[in-house]
Length: 51
Image 1 (cartoon, rainbow, N blue to C red):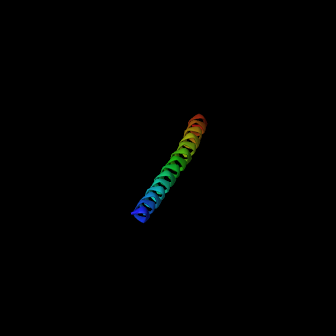
Image 2: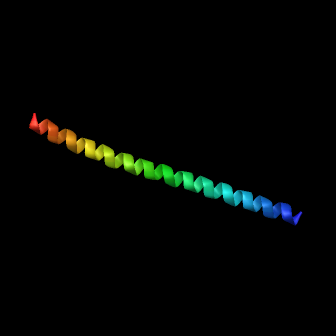
C-alpha cells in the first residue's frame, strides 16, 4: 500500500513538471512573438516615412 502511494506521488510530480515546462515554453513563444511584432511595427513606420 505504501509503494502505491509513492508511485502516485512520483506520477503527480512528473505531471506537474511537464505542465510547468509546457507553460514556460508557451510564455517564451509569446515573448518572441511580441518582439517580432514590435520590429514589424518599427519597420512598417520606417517604410511609410520613406514613401
